[in-house]
Length: 147
Image 1: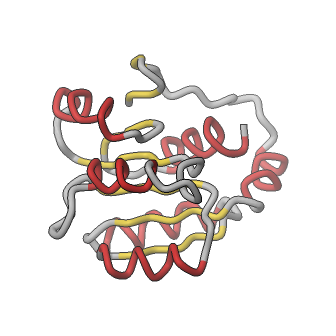
Image 2: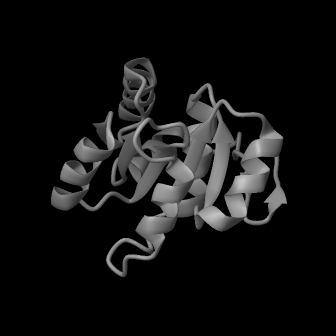
């Protein structure tokens, strides 16, 4: 996992009260863009269980429609999309004044080296490798939104 210019381990406060974490996460709206329906289903299930509001999109067009009517607190963005690469989409979003402050986490099953190389120019706040897990996703939300 790469974060803020340095590699960092998964840092969750294991002593944290799950109820207080859920209260914090229940105020968070997450948008996940991935062309794989299983990734969307898993991400939704993991984060809704934590109390998040989860919006999903499976294409660039659907993503634009969802984003036009909502302002998510954080976006999980697949790198390997058919119509536009997620790292390029992140650059575009970060250049828009009304979207530049939304944290973006690139998600991919690409090797770490590839993610490390594309990350700096993407404008994204962090990246993480698939598969999506509760701990990885909650960690990113805690670091960039609820933390």
